[in-house]
Structure formats: structure tokens, C-alpha cells
Image 1 (cartoon, each protein chain N blue to C red):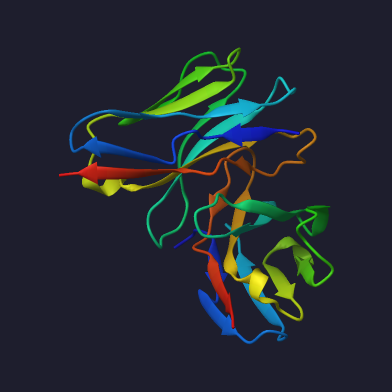
Image 2: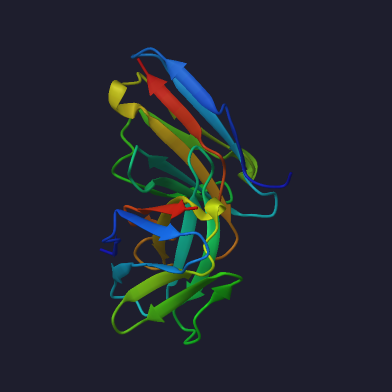
Length: 111
Length: 116
């Protein structure tokens, strides 16, 4: 399977804990995006990488959130000191030009 | 800032019939892309169809076609010969390389039900 993959698919954590998600994009795609989706809403942009450079961060990305893409391949999204409001589906997408291809997402539940 | 509006929270269609989902957007850019994504329940987002703004011809992908009206900033999706597997949330999305720096801007989605 050469699509976008994300791990883990589900994560349940207690408030205050740190969590880290991983995204492996389609191998030839140089752009990688993170989105957050809550129930009944469309995805909201969090951050975007072109190769290893993080080019844009949304105001939704508070200082508790950090993303990396070392070597321009896979990416990680870390949330520190999780809050119940962080519960959502975290989606990763990759692209070359134009259309973005999405992974299956990581569903985070903060208790 | 660019915005995308889907005014139909829910739609329903009979199997084998045709349905049209509406989308309007706002932008000051002249060069951009528009997309329709499908998200089945508990499954990942799938790219259904894309339209480049500079192309006057409406995009078509098998049973899916769009009606792109650039002046009206309208981008509707027509699904012909609807199938049970078409039931899903459909999101309209906008993309440009200008102020948005390349991220997709989504509408709130339309939930499509297909009746057998």
C-alpha cells in the first residue's frame, strides 16, 4: 500500500499526558499537512511542511503542539499536557501539486 | 480570507437517481483549485474530483461531475446513478498558493444518504 499512513489509529490518554502521532506520506510527495477534525465539522488546518521546512502554522496550533518532519520524510505531531478539548481526529495529508491525499487519521480521546 | 460554504447539511437521494451538492466560495485570487472530498463513516477522506480555476471545462470522473461557475464562485458536485456506496460526508475544499500558503480550506460538509 503506497498511500498515506498514520499511527496510531486510536489513542486514549489522560488529561495532562503527552502524546505523539506519526504520519508517513506518499514517498514522492514533498508537501505534508496536518489537520484537525472534530465531529460534524470539516478538517481545520494545523501546519504544513515543504520537505523538512515547516512553512506555516495555524493559530489553532498552540504552544502545546509541535510538529517535525526530519529529513523531509515522515512527520510527527506532539501534543503536550493534553486537554479534553484536544479530543479530535488528527489527519495527515501529502501532495506534490494540487490535490492532497489523506491518511486514515488518528483519533485522540482525552479523558 | 478565503471561505468555503456548503449550505446543505444533509441531502438524500434514491439509488440510481442523480443528486447535486452545492458549494460556494469566496476568494480574491484568480488562480486556484477546487476539490470535492468524500469521507465515509469512520473511514478516510478520499479525493473525488478536482477543478483548476483556469480551466473552463468542467471536470468529470466517471459518475461524478462538477458545475464550475467562476464568476459566481460556485462549484457544485453532481453524482449520477447514485449507489449505496456513495453515502458519506462530502466536503468541498479550496486551495491556492497565495495567502493560504497551500493548505486546503474546507466547507462544513454535506451528509449524503442513499436510499435503496
